[in-house]
Figure 1 (cartoon, rainbow, N blue to C red):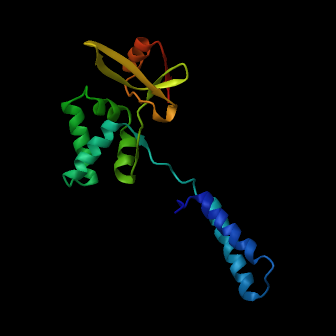
Figure 2 (cartoon, rainbow, N blue to C red; figure 1 turned 45 degrees about the vertical axis):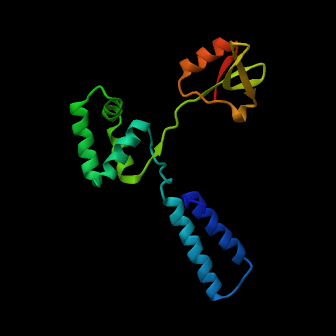
Figure 3 (cartoon, one colour; figure 1 turned 90 degrees about the vertical axis):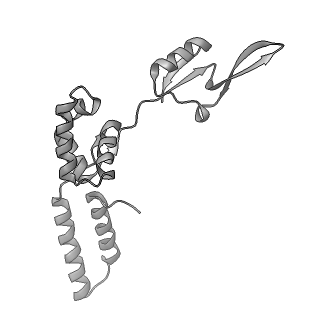
Length: 174
């Protein structure tokens, strides 16, 4: 199902009008006038606001409050109390700079920020995993690689850099 935004509404109304444009009669003229009026009003709407994108720590805080059965007001009030108790916490740092966005997220919904991810590539093969086994009593480590669709995605860039250094590859952000 398509989300109804201002733009989608206007397109739907225009398509209904187009289907009727060659029809005649008082009833049809009334329908066309109604569609014209609806298009004018739709154009006066403000653009559909997008939901704020919040960090994972904020998502966890909001979900924690919801799990406890807290109302929106209680979640918001508890957030500000939390900042007083743990001012150096990641969530507290976010809230200090983004209080309006946080309140909007609690009341109107939100999307969760996707963390950056990195892959390691060497000679057009993407790192998947290390394979370790023992041959003649000697440990042996090999690199399994494949195309980018199957690459291991690191959420810690430093770890990706260490693997790249170990295998002589490069780090790419995905």
